Image 1 (cartoon, rainbow, N blue to C red):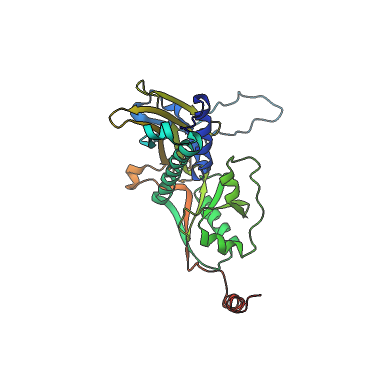
Image 2: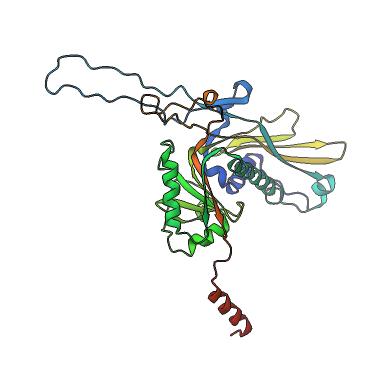
Length: 345
């Protein structure tokens, strides 16, 4: 039996669903679709978070009307943060004439699904690399066994000190050793996303909440690695390349979650091979909107990097490093386990 192909109109919805299933980190931060980039200069657009819009409140005279009201400008909207599409992620594989003619291959499950998963995994890896390379203003170390509730309160206190990251939309992202340390503390409370984030990966990674902030564990992080992040701490953009005229078959698409990709198939006559290629354009950028923090009208103005002589910090997240995290078993527990192994049953 030859390769069992899927209908072209069903290919894009299938591999976009497979790609989204692999998403975890990119589902936690702000996402922008590709249509915003069409015609953009230098493949770059400016994104505004909207939280710097400020208006002025005044008091009007009670019962009397001696003068007209005062109109004040709403300020702060002019500042934005750039994000650039600068990465072309792809997965390509060849199906020889022998494959196409003789082998029993289910194209959707055995070809498209692994390709979509590979592109999704790579996008996640790029997001994690951005977390690790971020210019955080705040970070602190914690010893194993420290009360997780106190850690959460302190992390939220530090993140709130700069008066930038909103309280809602924050989450803890932690490695496996940190998760074990927090789980045995009995400090975690139940947390339900209630449809806020829509992938099974995100829901299954949520192990509870601390200080009313959801806690998510991810095995891609180092075991002792942890962050408190706001969803607006990073931007990830995603756009499907166009189908080239030389392709034998191809489709582009975008799903409800905003993930876009392209699938094309062509024939390489030099090697008598059909090629299946899944690809997407992507870009990731952190938001560095550290404020001046003055007492007057400039309190919400962005820090002038030229005057400060340094890069503006990312104040929408922070990094936590755990020290000495390892086995959660005490010496007594270890002796008990060893005893059970020596005398099974």
